[in-house]
Image 1 (cartoon, rainbow, N blue to C red):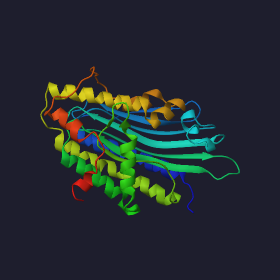
Image 2: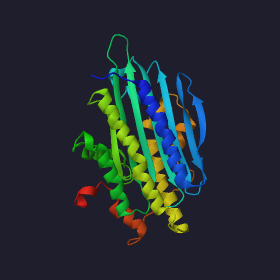
Image 3: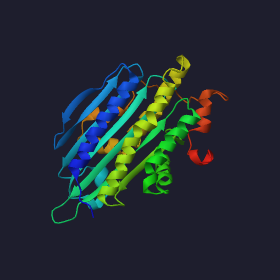
Image 4: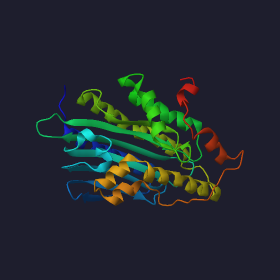
Length: 307
């Protein structure tokens, strides 16, 4: 059984943050990420990086955090009562990218490690994470590329891994009050310790390293697509769903706020501009209706393509 190596996880996550910021800034071509280092009262801290007002990215945040404490927040201890009375460490990189162009999807990724310890007992640990895509004017080939990359990231760990974590993503990023998915999914996993530490850590790295190959080609292909006020208005309306999910359902948001994390960093996932409109519905036969009809419910994207 391999030994837990928190320093290795931390070094990987810091490097991943660096690489993702470099890649996205290069694709933007004009903006750069500005770093805000912070300390958490009670233990730990992080570094938040935000690119705002670029040529391609209206706002993108890539956050690293490493927090620790003597007891768990309610969001964690209520879900896992056996962790009560244990100290904890939580490390992760979380990012959300909101482009200007409505033809470029919003994307989210997160990779994280958690360990809870108590003297005289074995540590309880797990990895979690994934990535998901939220298009406004979707292109089918982009969705297939996204899921092909996700499947490739999982392939060395077995043929059943991608379908299971794809399904988990569809279930997790579902807005029950809207009866629709947040987007077209991807991967989601949590509480993962089915393999030994080294094997599970290698899986996490495969997922984290796959985000840029999954997302950057889509940004490059769509960032110059012409759009007008109609498309921008629809993008801002659909961003409202993103806000609703993050504030109502997202576990990471709850954990961060309840553990005394830095509010600005936790809520960096929210878009800079958004709008709501009472009981709005797309007109039949419009590009906006195509999103609702073809993309906001779970689908076997690769199976339908015969792959």
